[in-house]
Image (cartoon, rainbow, N blue to C red):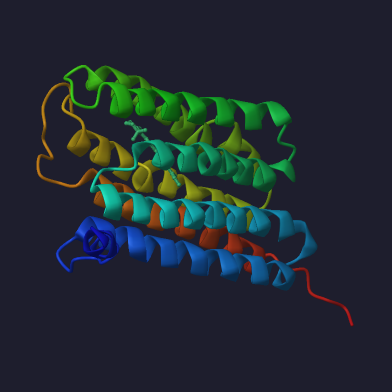
Length: 245
Ligand SMILES: *C/C=C(C)/C=C/C=C(C)/C=C/C1=C(C)CCCC1(C)C
């Protein structure tokens, strides 16, 4: 019995799911430390944005640590804690868009629109995975989630986020464009995981049969959470007011 308990904590070299949870934990931890320390190396006006990048990766690090253990011990997908993580971190990414565009006059209503759309996207995704994951109907929930997702893409590319960024100077315009690519391409990784992991897949078809949902999500998280933070860090570095000593 104890032998089994011990073995549960050993990552088999062929267990890529557990391995990506392990690497994910480490990467999120390292990124959080980086952002927290670099807060003092940027202009005051960017400090809160860098702090939020640190919080996003820190929250993810804690969840990844837990999900790694959960997956090793049960062999199952940690659906619930995956969504707890997303429900905390995705709205914080919406806060990042708001903080960046606030300098160009963004109103709090824009933040609520982004947060509301992200909650619809995640709650319907959770229902699709946790309740209908083994049934064909999961595509309906994935579709509703996808509509909310495209609304976020719209806001960032053509809506208020894009318009305000255009008024906030070239550095902000460039950063919002790059973050827009993360939302359009980087976030599109997640529906692939959903299609791979639920029986309904893509309108009832399982086009990514055999692909591990958790590996897809873990890759997506590493790109999006760390990459997103680095874009904001680069913006803060490029937008330093020269100190007059
Ligand atoms: C750090 C975590 C992030 C950026 C998570 C983002 C998650 C999504 C963009 C999820 C989207 C989904 C769809 C668009 C349809 C299928 C269900 C979801 C929830 C996987």
